[in-house]
Image 1 (spheres, rainbow over the protein chains, first blue to last red):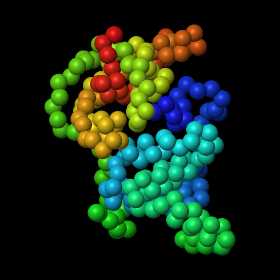
Image 2 (image 1 turned 180 degrees about the vertical axis):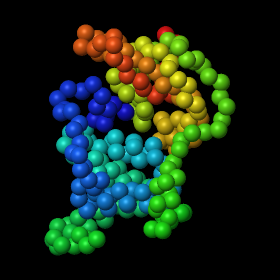
Image 3 (image 1 turned 60 degrees about the vertical axis):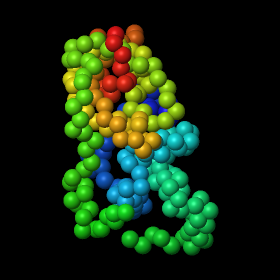
Image 4 (image 1 turned 45 degrees about the vertical axis):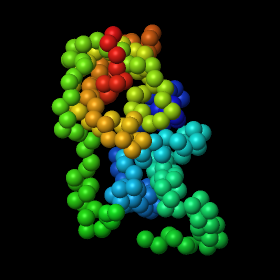
Length: 108
Length: 115
């Protein structure tokens, strides 16, 4: 699909200049997003190309405004819903409960 | 369904997940041959970047046979030959490009036509 992920040749993005001490994960939630994606990938309900296609289907404006692991999380969430593991209602309810209790879910 | 246990994570990561397949398919193109990347705009997943579509390149290397990602994203495992194709920067970017620079893109056989 001709999505926002296909950036080759686009103008307006700065050159990629990674820090010398670039961390693998920039926040604890990124570590978790990676682990969840890996664990669910190993479960076998979808393959790598399905995962990529799920990330590509993110709304183009949102895709360009968000970070690498936000793309991963979006793709994982979409596949979990599409394959029937979770409903969007369940995710929304969990998000509301987390918002009401700021420290919930942050323990490592 | 397999469950990924913590003690297996390192082994799984080390093993990786190669998409290479053993099928011996005939090669439609040979190294050094001129090819044109197809102008296709599928709604599903594809690995052909927009900036090479419709452009002329030269087959640099036959990479072998791999799972075709466009079909795999629909749940079908189809073997297909993959080529490294060289495009000059001038071909891709016109007057803003250069004949001295090139981009090598791995492209599946069905993304390519004879030049």
